[in-house]
Length: 87
Image 1 (cartoon, rainbow, N blue to C red):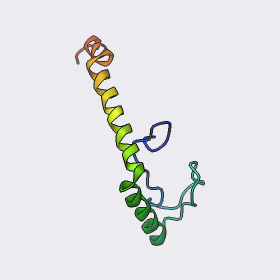
Image 2 (image 1 turned 60 degrees about the horizontal axis):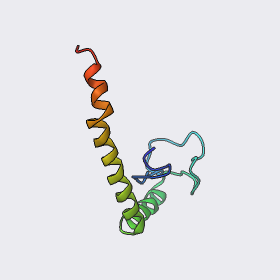
Image 3 (image 1 turned 120 degrees about the horizontal axis):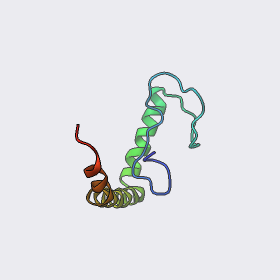
Image 4 (image 1 turned 90 degrees about the horizontal axis):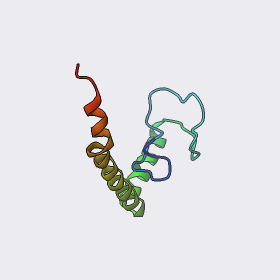
């Protein structure tokens, strides 16, 4: 969820998993193999993205999400929590 959508905030490794995939990845890209070579290639790609322009976009999106979460915590969500019965 955090790696897809309009404003992604993360990179989702697809090759690192237990067992074989049940179905093809919905995001496209290379098939999920999960062997050592594919995991290594994916990690190299993630590290490269983390040093490139994509990391700037991910950081900007994460910072915007953090602002939204703080606003909700201090705004509407706070009012809802105050209405909840104490257990």
